[in-house]
Image 1 (cartoon, rainbow, N blue to C red):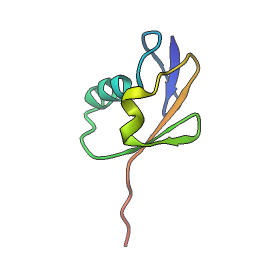
Image 2: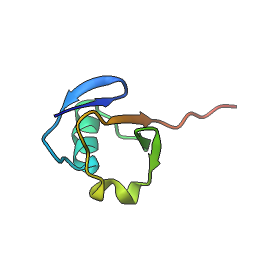
Image 3: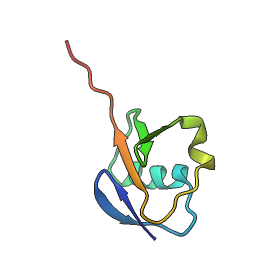
Image 4: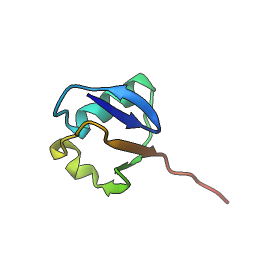
Length: 69
């Protein structure tokens, strides 16, 4: 099935869990820092990644913290 991650289309297996998709995505993009995740514009707590099932057409936004001064 197709989903969007940061506005880019990705193909994932049916009924994939958010945790698995994030793990694969972060490894492929070499992301090691902490990040926040929104699924269809709703914040998802890190503790819910493993139980959140994705559906075709879902939109995932991965946001890294920004420090300023």
